[in-house]
Length: 95
Image 1 (cartoon, rainbow, N blue to C red):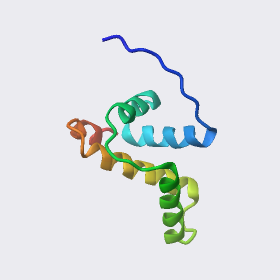
Image 2: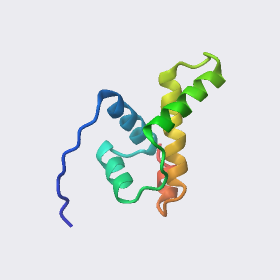
Image 3: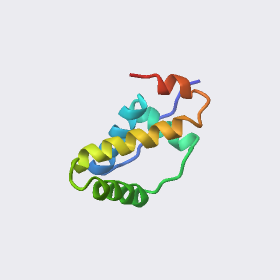
């Protein structure tokens, strides 16, 4: 089946978060966006995501910088989402 192109705009911060989530899931940015748009598995607003990262930063008391915590948070969320997917074993074994 031929895929149709669509255009979407993101801020630099949103693209960075998408790239981190895509890398953690072992997907390209476009595959991550497509998967989330077509079959969303988990609903987490941008604000909720940033609150979660802020809470993790506070929990770590400065032992990790925010960029590392954001990457780790995106990784964990992606893996949790993948666990609900029928293709989860392939995604979870990606290195």
